[in-house]
Image 1 (cartoon, rainbow, N blue to C red):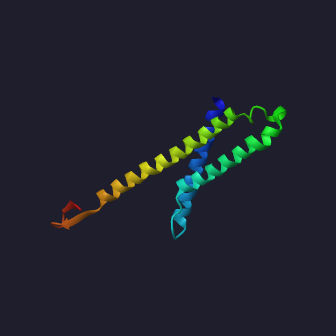
Image 2 (cartoon, rainbow, N blue to C red; image 1 turned 45 degrees about the vertical axis):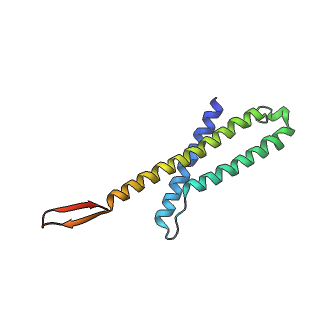
Image 3 (cartoon, helix red, strand yellow; image 1 turned 135 degrees about the vertical axis):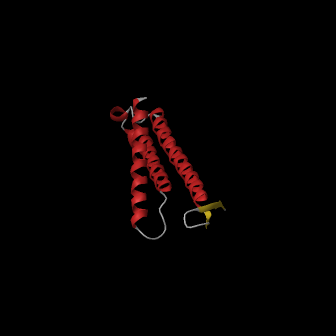
Length: 124
């Protein structure tokens, strides 16, 4: 269980780093924005493939040295941590996208200056 929690926390820390790096890149670079969720998913899927290759090819040949890492049960725990991190990333992306859409919908209101001191906001 401790290995699973460590794997999950390290994957979520990687998610935070990737999201911050993509946000900084998008903020200071003109052009199309980079989606941090997709970058993170690509990195985690590549890590999952490399982990599978190490588990079933490299560690399987050296059972006496890497026996605890080469079992399918150990790989399934690590794979579950990868999958939960990807699901968390896409859920986070969905929630922030919905909040952003609601915020921009609320901000798009027709403003009518009724006098020098007041305004009427009509939702569009």
